[in-house]
Image (cartoon, rainbow, N blue to C red):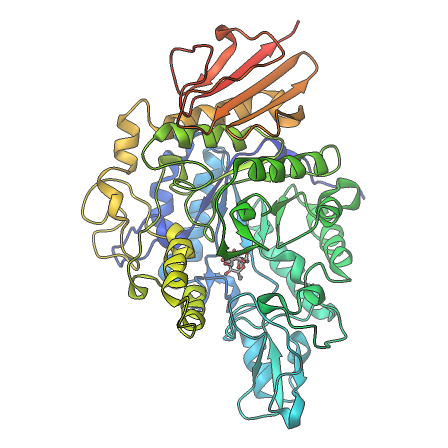
Length: 554
Ligand code: ISL
């Protein structure tokens, strides 16, 4: 059977919407689908051609929708199925595709499968989850695995001797993919949305779906205990290929998998088109370059060379073998303004950073608000933070008298809620997001950083992104031109080239607040510059200057 699956993802520019924080149409303080519909012209004008929508399925919202209780319906405060159909039509009419978030490593503990599994010993759904007898007469968990949100990975079912596995909060029980019925359920969910016209999926924590079946305790190592048992498990590739063969091959859809702490070798196998698993993956090695071991609370100072080296490795590893996703932000990461060498004080630093990642080889993503330079939330107390992960971690830090204060300040700085404050459309009381007080407080910088101000200023970051998007969409060299990092060890400049046949693109971005010399081996003239954040170009690069050259060698 021939595959309907094509490569449109290679020319996609994807905008991520976090629905509860994008736009509130009915003034209940929570974003919704009609709110998204009201902003589709904004997205078209920006130039993106695809949207990744974070979960809108029915959910108790313990983890803002990453805990799904019904995969085939919409969370009522977000809208109805009719709203959804109107939204997808509105997108398609504007040449914008839609990929949905697929959260199938776990369900909500309120999903009917799970409720039946724990309440009825004879339930056909018991095997949908990992339910195991505890140790010590059922009083202790079956093993010492840790989850990702500062909790042990097992929760006892009432006062029985049984426990269930959850790699995230206890309200997110893990599905048992060993059970073929679970895989059939997932395929049916995929088909349901694809038949409604959805163009693909962002697959949440997809490299956790297969677990080693020994369920033995591991050598204890802080939060990482058990990682070898459930990251890139033994049947991961088999499951993904099965989904591809039975579902994705029959649709012209794209898939991007979230690959948690994956190795380069796994990343190649996940995205090698010949293996038919996923089209592309999110690799976090560069966003983790300012922490140790991928744990954001183990914060360390940003170093441009480390950041460049990690991106370089991603590029070189997948070149000709797989496909990268390019990103700086998402709903789990703090904002990039003030991070990765950029600074709130100088908008040029955000432009330099944008040019550095956007034209690498891969599919670029923009997280809502990134295009206007939205900033971190500046949390001052735990009441301002809603994220369940932050609250779990707070409980741990609170027990550490000597370092408590320092760790709690780090928590405010890196909390996922930094990215989840409402999108700021204007400088009105609630930033134009809503007319009532939103579910989480509006960013204090709303008077300076908002869409209205960005659209009125020809030098804004918004217009810089808009031009980057045009360059990406209109030049074949940006799609699959060969990538080469230039001066990898230069601590101040991020420079690279992309080359295909007669076209060559060169990006040179300064991450320094001083003028810097930068010598290229080739002769480039100012007339080859297609985008820059300065009008005049001298020999030396000005502080945070970025230049993009496009040369036709014929
Ligand atoms: O943000 C993180 C920890 O601070 C990441 O480790 C994150 O948990 C990981 O990338 C998985 O994220 C995804 O699955 C989670 C959900 O909470 C995140 O929002 C989602 O992006 C569980 O579904």
